Image 1: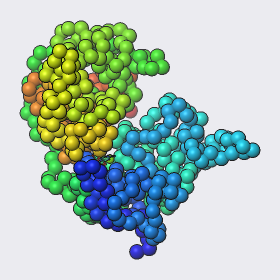
Image 2 (image 1 turned 45 degrees about the vertical axis):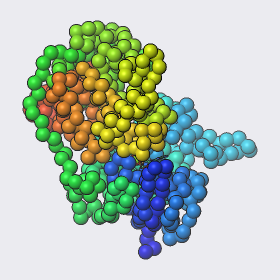
Image 3 (image 1 turned 90 degrees about the vertical axis):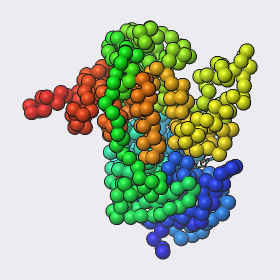
Image 4 (image 1 turned 120 degrees about the horizontal axis):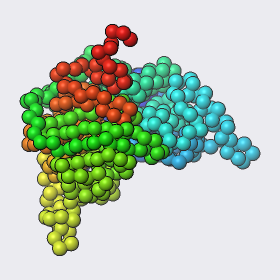
Length: 509
Ligand SMILES: Nc1ncnc2c1ncn2[C@@H]1O[C@H](COP(=O)(O)OP(=O)(O)OP(=O)(O)O)[C@@H](O)[C@H]1O
Ligand SMILES: [Mg+2]
C-alpha cells in the first residue's frame, strides 16, 4: 500500500462532446518506469495533464505518497515533486538552456538574477544523471534531443521525483532514443519514478516495469512487463490483433514522376546540405530514404516542396520543371506532402479540423465558387475524411488544437493522400501514431502505390523503411550513396551504408 508514489483513483475528465477519461486508475510505484499505453485519442495526455494540474477532473482522487492532494495548477504539481515533459515542447526558443531551466524560479543575488549559479547547478545535474546539455546554448540552435534533455533537467531543477514523459521518443532519432533509455535507467537508479507514454512497444518491453493500458477513455489493465509480450500489449490496447508486417505485391513501376538532377540545397546557416543529389521515383513505386538524421534529408524535402530555396540543379515532376516554383504552384502541379513537423507546416491549430482539410484547396471548386467559400461543401468533405481515415474527434468543428497528437497526424495524412497527388512525399508519416493506426497508414500508402502514385518515404525507423519501401535509397552526406531492394538487404547492411561505409568491405574493417 505505502509504496505508491502516485495514485490516481477513479479519475473522470470530460470535454465538450467526449469523456476523455472514464474512471481510470493508475498506481505508480517508487522507482519504477510505468508505461501508459493506448490508441491515439485514448486519453493518455489528458490523464497526465490532470496529474500535472493543467486540467481539473470531474471526479476522482489523486494521492501523492499516500496523501490525498488537489493539484490545482502546475505550480502545485511542482511543489509535490511532479515534473512533466509535454508531447510538444514548451521551451522559449531564443532563450538559452539555463534561462529556460530557471524560468519562474530564478535565484537572485542582491536583486540580480544569478545566472552563473544556475549554469553551475545545471552542469552538476547534467553530470549526475548523464544528461548532456550546454547550459549556454540557445534552444533554437540545438538538436531536438538536447532540447528534450533541457526539458528533463528543467523538471529535475525544480526538484521533481516523479517524471511524466509524454511520447518523448516520437521526435527522436534511433540513436537519441538509445541515449534517452539509458538516461531513464539512471534516473530510476537515483530513486526517481517515471511515467512514460509511448506507442513503441519495444521501448516498453526494453525498459518498463509495468504498463497500464487504456482504451477509449477506459482503464483496461495494468500488467507486469516481464509477464507479457508486445503482441499481447498491442491486442490489449487496440482490441484486435495487429499486423506488424503488411502483405504487399511486387511493385510495377511505370513512368518517371519525380526526377532530381544534381540538386544542391543549403540549410538556414548557409551550409551546403544537399550536395549534388540525383534521384528518380516512378509511378507505382514506394522509394524509402534511409539515413541518419542530419545528412540533408530535411533540406531535400523542403526543397522539393518549395519551402527552401534551391541553390542549383533541377527538380522535374512528370518531366516539367518545378525547381523554383512556390509551394502553392508545386502543390497544384501534383505534389502532396506529409510534413515532419505537424505543428509548423501541417495544421492551423486554431482552425476547425474540417477546415484544416482544405488548406490547399479551399479556393478551388467545389469548396469555392466565384470567390465565395461554401462551408457546407467543406464540412461535408471534412466529415467524409474523418470517417475514411478514422480521425477521432468529437466533431468536424473541433479545433485542430483539441485533437490528440496522433489524430492531428491522421488528419494531415487524410488531407494529403485524399487529393491523390501524382507524387506523395511522406516525411515520418507515422510519427506519434499507435500500432493500429500505423498498420492502416502503411496499407494506405501501398494502396496509393497500386493506384499509380509515386511515393517518396522518409523515415528514421528502419522497420518502416524495410516493410513499406519497394526500393531503398541511402542518403549520406547530402547524396544518395546506395540503392537497394529491401528483399536483398538487412538492417545491419543498411546501418553500415547509412554511416558511410560500404558493406562489401566489411572484412577489412
Ligand atoms: N483541450 C481539449 N478540448 C477538447 N477535447 C480535448 C482536449 N484535449 C483532449 N481532448 C480530447 O480528449 C480525447 C483524449 O485525448 P488525449 O490527447 O488525451 O489522447 P492521447 O491518448 O494522448 O492520444 P495520442 O496518442 O494521439 O497523443 C480526444 O478525443 C481529444 O480530442
Ligand atoms: Mg497524447
